[in-house]
Image (cartoon, rainbow over all chains, first blue to last red):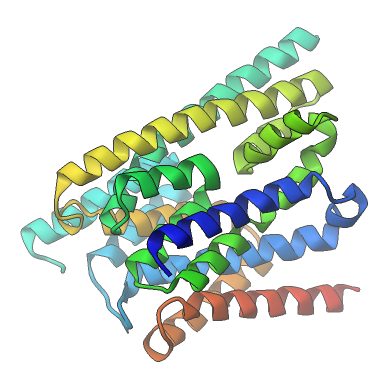
Length: 104
Length: 224
């Protein structure tokens, strides 16, 4: 599957899901149980992505500058730093660690 | 009374939109760093228009995951938008075209700003203004980010890979403020650590999703 095909199908799926929500009777999809399960599924997906983005390198788990950057990001989030600050500081930390050669 | 509520909705909408749009720069830059070209990046922001799913696409693409797994992960992350749509249906009201546009703008932020309002008119203003402002801002900042990202060269030297990881932490953070989601996040993380070296690219996230779903369903059963 080419990248273009993937992007178009994935976009159609995500867009279709939004539109579908306007067709479904409110009594079905706004059920609290469905809301809770969906919230928790989102948590599992994001947690998995955190791991692969932080420590994934192909089919290996590695510890490098990203882990330290993510640690700093978590501390910033703990102190309610805005999104953009968290992302920029994480990039800065990783870039600096690599520049001085303390981490790969 | 009504006008004060509407003014407050307007200022909340614009504040949220400014913050999220700025963040679009990092999406654009990270997308080209992960190997997408300018237009592939822009199509994601124009048509997919959902931060979590968009970051999943570029994260998995960078890891070499196959198409079906990328589509599944992006689709699963997009389920919540469908639930937001159900919630926003009454706020948006009838009209095919109106609902079509509303559908595209139904995301975390537009729903959250609308729900935060106390007055029906402010709810509508909050939804539409947040959706429209983020759509314009997110797309223009994505384009800017993609251009900047292309000019930067080696993404690792700028820490862009760490920025992507931090972006997911920032998306996850507000969702793990109670014991149950923390437990599910921990299990999903451990499952992923085990699955990355032992399964093909793109599979770990699906196993983590299945584990999370099982835990969620199990806790619903014990709740009942």
